[in-house]
Every structure is written in C-alpha cells, then in structure tokens.
Image (cartoon, rainbow, N blue to C red; front, side, top):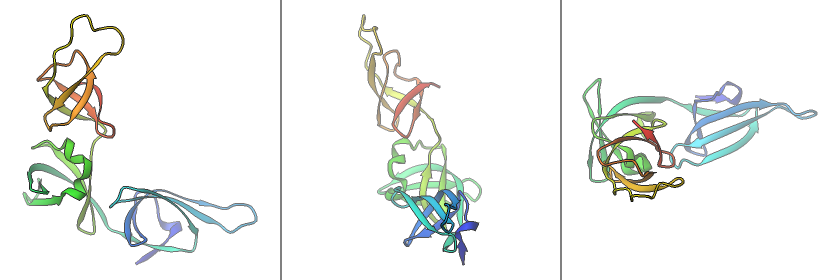
Length: 186
C-alpha cells in the first residue's frame, strides 16, 4: 500500500527506484510563490549510498516492513555468516554481501543488531565502539616517547589498527568501526 510523503517519517523504509531505502530525513518545504515540496535524504540499504530526493507532496511511496533483531554471531560458513536468534535458537545465515565491512568486527558469541526488511536481512548495525582483544603488538622502542607515537597492532579478528605505543598484547581496547580508529582501553 502506497503512503503519501507527508505521512512518511524518519526511520521508515521505503521502496525508491525498486530498492529498499531508509529515510534519514524527510521534511516538507514550502518556498514562497511555489507549491510545497518534500526533501528526503535516503540511504540505499543494499549499496549504502546516500540519495537526496526532492518530490511533490502528493507523491506516494511503498513503505516496507522493517525489523531489527539482536542475533548472536556464531561462525563463518564459506561466504555466509551464521547468526543465532537467542529467542528461538534458530540459525540464520547471512551472505557476505549483506555483512559487508562489518565482518572485520564480528566476534563469536557477541550479539549484533541485524536489519531485516520484509523478512530479508539487509545489514549489520555495529555499535559506535567495539571492544576487541590485541593478539599481536610489537614492543615499544625505548626513548621513542616524544609526540604522538603510534604502532600497528593486530586484533582478534585479524584487522590491523594504529594505537599508542603503550598498548600490549592481551589487552582489550575500544575501536570505532567506521574508521577503525583506536578510542581507548576497555
């Protein structure tokens, strides 16, 4: 069922150009001497691309049913990733294309929010910071303490992150997933 744009709000998922898109912003603008317009900022849930759309207030879009589930990451299975629903104990496999760059931050036994639209998984929502264990860290060079000296460490999922030189192997640190930057010790 199509919904007029003045009834669409932030957080809805609509079908735009045959693609599911999350409405980031939707506001009605009435410029002087013109009819009202709706300016929408959309995020394509399949490609991640942000789209700016301007449309008439009378236009309609299909609003899709969205659901966010907390699923526990279990294991990789080829090009699929297995998650377990903690309520039904059902295993849900999600493709590598849907998981995307979040694969670098998936830790077995931890819960993640999975975004579903009409029963199909469309993305993994990562928290703003993730705690990960350092498995490999070179020793700091004695005397190399002036300024903001950093070194590259390897985390439990295999990704490399730049950290201050005092971080040692076995420590738990916080990482920002968007840019893989060090935020501090856990």
